[in-house]
Image (cartoon, rainbow, N blue to C red; front, side):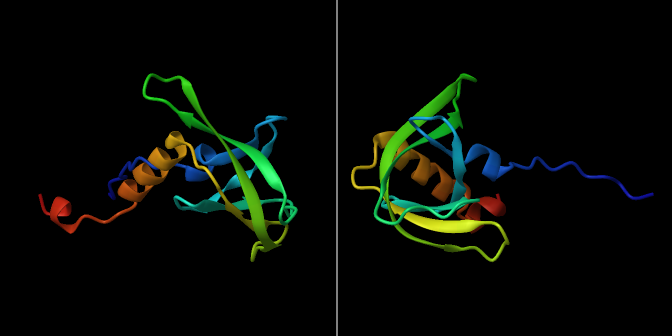
Length: 119
């Protein structure tokens, strides 16, 4: 009889949702992220060259929700390969410390460490 394994999975789109900071309405979720910007996957095309006030809602260490607020300018938008979705590239001119910390945490989380796997 096969043994069923339980692996903890993290639903990243749930955690990496981007909200409009003014209206608190969801804008989409992060497709990729860097210190300089991010790609947003959204059901709508974004207005190129417009600046958006955005918010990330991240679970904090104490169980409380942590907000990372920032402004970003849309540099490009195009239809995604998934019907009904659009990819939009955003540039952050002055990313806050919380955003830069998130980028570093995600980089560490998704980096393969071969020496750690053999330990």
